[in-house]
Image (cartoon, rainbow, N blue to C red):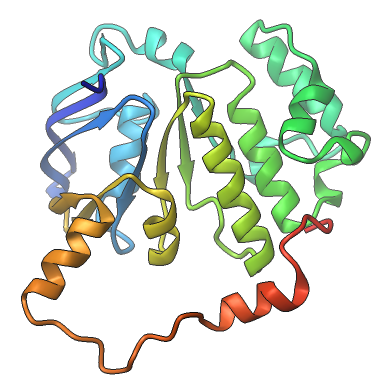
Length: 253
């Protein structure tokens, strides 16, 4: 039986009189890719930031790998990796220097080139972050979540704004990370992405979880209601055409 690595029970977050998170509960199994989906303002980012120890909760219980958020936030910080946004990187440093900097903050001895190789950026080692393409920036951002060899990583909309090639290559990277035993929590606005990557998803709206299951089961439940798409689904879509014509291999995206 799978181990529960994150347990959230009755989580509540208030901002003044506004209730952003309304008593949600869910578990994440060790080694799975778990998706948290919802429209803007639904409460998913707030929920993740609480689990990541970045935001205080109003009520509820959060346990991460046996550590209670209330009493052991520093222990939780040691076993998680959080995707950094652009503002988290010094523009004057190259990728090797940035990795060395973060490794020092984590007090870790790592091989920067090996880490870059793991995300297909070894040839960009001497480049500055600002010189990277969108896909390369996202892959480097994910690489920084791995510096402290975390048990869990959190990815907040990692493929937003990427072209189809870069997006699918990032999917491959996320699946590779999971295959090495790391639990992945991801938010995305792309439903096809969630369907491909996630073992289970929680759909959150107006601060409440309104569905939680595997993508297949949620789709089957909808079909069972008699739902039909108004247009016949083809065996491929335009994105498949694009990838087939331009290639899926990494080409500096």
